[in-house]
Image 1 (spheres, rainbow, N blue to C red):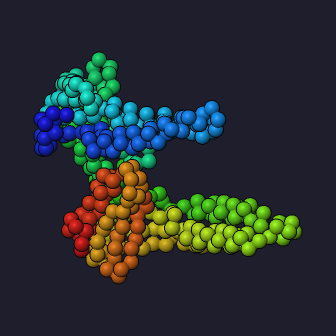
Image 2 (image 1 turned 30 degrees about the horizontal axis):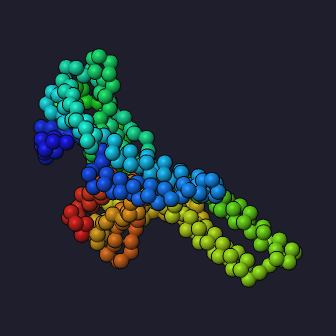
Length: 326
């Protein structure tokens, strides 16, 4: 995009972006080229070692797809100002395409929740000619209501119906994770027990078949320990954070299936951090370090930007400074 489309936003405009940065494209293209180079020698095995050759062929095709995605993916920018929308689209080596939509060409606007692991919203505009235009995702998951109202007023449109967003700062409480459900944990317990019993059948039969060995005993013992640990800490899977003004209510299921409640105030918090899986689009969690040294991890969130936005809202509600220190 030209420099004019990358300038900082101000209160009289809203910018929405979708696309991949140059560094991300270079990393993706490099990985694709490396995969293709590794796969090419394997194609010589197609006549003799059929399966090895087929695996190399699939790896080559996958590498070409990655390379195509790095080279052909579009960058899209919407600049919404008073009375108009400027839409710019550009491929890495292509020409910039612009389109201007005036407010009197727009007949309606509504919010759409995008499918996927993360909670993400876009705006859908309907023009007088019947076209539907979908914006890039709204940038801050905690400010969806404020952003949509601001956009509606810039374009002289009625305020849209509020979206059901558990992470929006306009809510009296924001929720991370699903409400605790004892039936879910009971179902997982039954599943683990059935799985453990099924995997144990060969080891139970082994003494009668004369195939019992020290390795078999070790493997069965390790499996039993893993199953016990999973069952013991299964209740941690079902947790819900409810962030109020000044405190966080954490609901968990106990081993007995009852609901345990813990309340954390701003005075209890030493720092609030974000931990990631170390790769793009992986799951992230918000980690609260208490003054006692205890660490508490939130239910997972998808997306680095989303997680940092929620972290900032939690810091604001607990009245901590921006670094996360109390």
